[in-house]
Image 1 (spheres, helix red, strand yellow):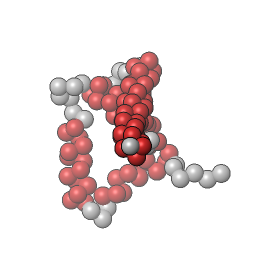
Image 2: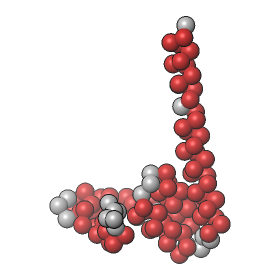
Image 3: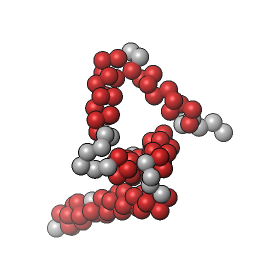
Length: 110
């Protein structure tokens, strides 16, 4: 079975800039600055990126930031904990929208 995502495609990410080099350059400058050491360490930023990658369900980002986390010294326990934090926020976000559902149902029931 073929799949929409191919791990080898991640290496072609820079191709996105071929027809818009100025925008690509600006994106890369911003992206590089975002992931530079700052108030948060590069390892912490990689863990955040890994967690976000799971919430946006980007298989390329999951692969890239799993590798980055390991390279920056994170271990599997920390990476798994970051994933659970992201999943809890995503699950909680779904549940809190239940307030809108309950408000709508109460409004219709009156």
